[in-house]
Length: 164
Image 1 (cartoon, rainbow, N blue to C red):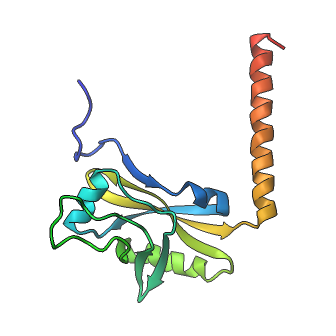
Image 2 (tube, rainbow, N blue to C red; image 1 turned 90 degrees about the horizontal axis):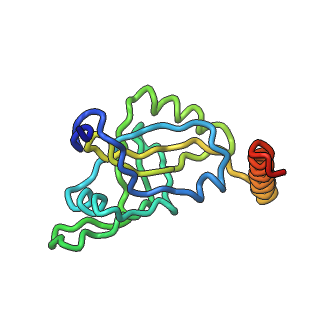
Image 3 (cartoon, rainbow, N blue to C red; image 1 turned 90 degrees about the vertical axis):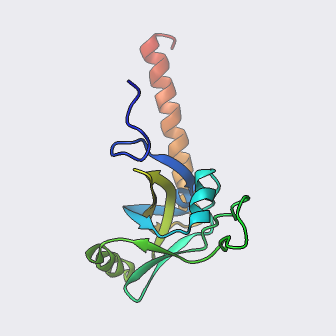
């Protein structure tokens, strides 16, 4: 027995695009999952695994959530009705969640950024994060701490194995 068929409940999540730079540039405070409104050729392009969230960000306009700057290239097999690669895309969340996000965004220094774009149960989803921008010295400190933790883990592993 393999597992559930794609598109059924419990199917594995298929990650299409990740914004790895966002975790470096921002201190992530909270994450949210939102649906995304797409056209047919956008879905086909995503199913080919083609997208970029590097310049993407989310905004709240008229009590609606919008994904701006995300790049989904045109579908190669598409015709005259192909989509615009960098158009604004509406995000689907409950009204109460959007209200909570708006309240938190009014705090200074918080931004709403997309972390990853994926398919879950056959539907396209975006993982959004509320993040506080890091200064360059903060980024260096985080990298130094990560390297130190990695060295400690290596040394501990060698000690446990008896290789000292």
